[in-house]
Image 1 (cartoon, rainbow, N blue to C red):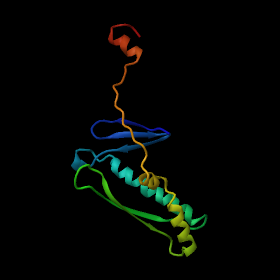
Image 2: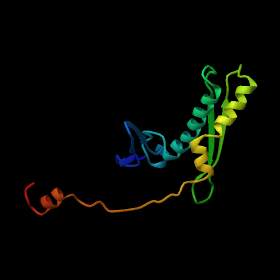
Image 3: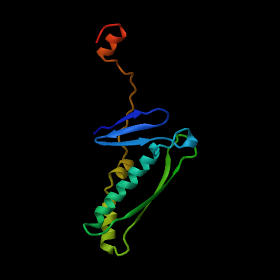
Image 4: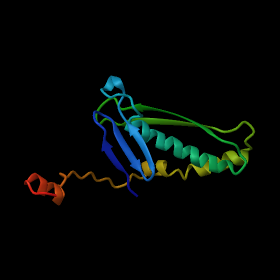
Amino acid sequence: MRLTVHSLGGDRHRITIGRHELIVDQPREAGGEDAGPTPTDLFVASLASCVAHYARRGLGGSGGAPVVHCSWTMSKTPPWRVAAIAIDVTLPAATPDSRVAAVRRAVAHCTVHNSLLDPPMLTIATATAVPDAASVRLAAGARA
């Protein structure tokens, strides 16, 4: 699985995931243009939307739709990070106890939540782009 992030200038970036594109940015008060959510917003949103997905599955085929509300706080000291996340899942009023239990079981399968509980191995590599052969020829005065 792969995605690509391209800088659009300033703090704005385009994320391409398959056929989908997202724009991330920083708020104006942080120097951005507020053209999209921040990467941290997307991080928390990925968790909340994953919980919503599994809650909906737990409700079954005709169980209605859950509403998920999420809030988070940032750390007050370095390393800067999301320090706490609270997620509230509201189920339809007529949800029977058996479905509430099914939702709780289903939400335990949330992939994003499980990835936070057992973090993936993370590597960040940095490299300098290698110009392609045509660029090298053009830079040397050759004709392409």
